[in-house]
Amino acid sequence: MKENNYNDENDSTLTILKDKMAGGNREKYNNNYSKKCQNVEHPKSPSGEEMVKLDYDLKQNRFNCPSRLNPQTATFIDVGIYAMVRDRKKPSTIEKHLRYARFMETHRVPVDFRNPSYENFIRHMDYREQIEQATPNALAHEWKAMQTFLTAYGIPFGEGTIWNYKPPPAQRPRQRVLPLPQTVSKFFTYDYVRDEYERTLLQYLFCHSFLIGWRIPSEIVTMKVNDVHLDDQIPYIIITEPKKRSNTRPLFNIESAILTSTVHKSFKNWLDHWRPKVENQYSGDALYLWPSGKPLTVRTLGHVLSTQGKRVWEDYRPYDMRHWCAVARLIKTKVETKTFDVFHVQKWLGHETSATTNTYISQAISYYSILPVDWVSLALKPTQTLAGQRDTKKTNRMPNMALLPDFSPVENNGPVAI
Image (cartoon, rainbow, N blue to C red):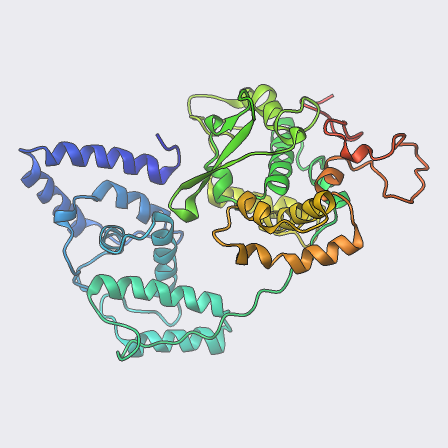
């Protein structure tokens, strides 16, 4: 059974639904559903989490979901149920749209979702753009939130209709400056907090995220103990992709220092030595746990990583770790094969097309010209000096030591604190 809030509650709801549809209780179930929908008030939490959690308690008999909602009586929860059942939107998308809708409804220039009018909506959007100077992305998200309500109400929008809002064109994302491997290695050993377990948890999260390059924080949160296969002839992990309707992809050919090493911050050391320290009745099968023993959550994890990462790298943002991995993996293929292997990195990162991976080529070329070595190995072995530089501290007594798979970095405290 899935362990995240969405899928866990969804599974139980579907079980209840099957029982109800088996016969005898359909009328009672329908009446309870309608009564709950009528009595539920708009959730007061601006985060939208409460809305989506209640959503699962009320859905999912399709026969009870009308083809259109009445805007004067429908609640935000009703719109969320409609978006899931009729529009087939993902829970995470619904949560985001409802969160923006709550912001729009309580704004200084509010949007009236019970009596939707284009004049009212465009007044809000003009104020957001001209007075508050909202970004194109923020305006686009608010327009998508409005579209969710218009769809539920059966109000047409787009070309040839009154509701034909055009958000400003999205800004081209600027290329982020990425930290060099020596800086990345500091993320793996930095003393973030005093608590030993929490400090180690952050070090492992940064280490695995930079080197695996999964989507942050959603794919971290979905990782389970059973997703790590270390006893197979070829060790591998399975990554669940919430942004792709929870598709999974296996990841092979991971360096032993990341998977099975006993002297690095590997998955094996995490499972053998650290996770058991806090595991309790709340842990379930989640791979990473807070000091309380509870699984990580998307919102809290994103905030923690952003706050703590800036202590090591001033310009750090959580998604930089995926960008860094893309560039580092491309450089690694260049070092090993004399060419940038786009196909290999595409499969590693889970890109649907090679066009997405190609966007990293220019950065990879630039950084390779600066530092033409295996970035992954160098991040794992921060004491390795660059070719041609004198090692005055005698930390590198063997040539090419950075390429050895299980050399323990000097500052790495191994599986347990010393």
